[in-house]
Length: 236
Ligand code: 13P
Image (cartoon, rainbow, N blue to C red):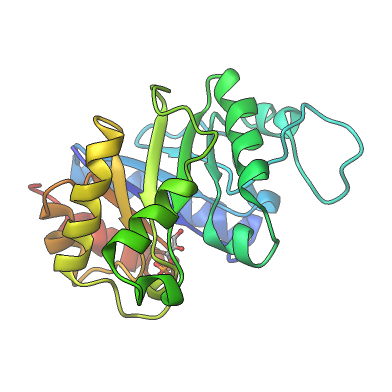
């Protein structure tokens, strides 16, 4: 069993998300996969988390039930859709929206106390990658500050920033090296890889030692591509 998730980012409308998810449900009725699948639509397109073969998660939420936080959604808005899965710390939130480690940790702490499954993202920029393995690991471990690694519903996604949306994933050697080193710290916590995963490389990536699945952006936004990814990941 692997964990395979699609992050829609700022793509798809409510209408197209419904269509995508309805058709994905139909596809998975026939595929009979053992993988655990999650779809993260944008906030405006959240759907009730009531599909049989996959979960609906949110890409972001603020650490509040409700209140005066313009532009944010909180627990109450997720509860309406029975959503209990949340992405925290994606590099686009950290880099573009300047979410610091304290903010990521607060989100983790708030939603883990509510028993949410949390996909927590870490990943280094190119300038850190160039400094070598020890610098990369130091950077990644600092992104785990304030995160309780004993939390049973924690999933970590290693997404090197330089591989996101570029069409060029990290090499198999790079992925295995970082995952193997991270696993020494993470123990049994599932560890996903993300960054230009597609139908052509999914199988070799999720076969690697210490890779428990994939978090996929652009290659999953068209349903037919995501279905092909799921087909190609069978038998792992
Ligand atoms: P891409 O698959 O488009 O590289 O995006 C990865 C990602 O950021 C998933 O969260």
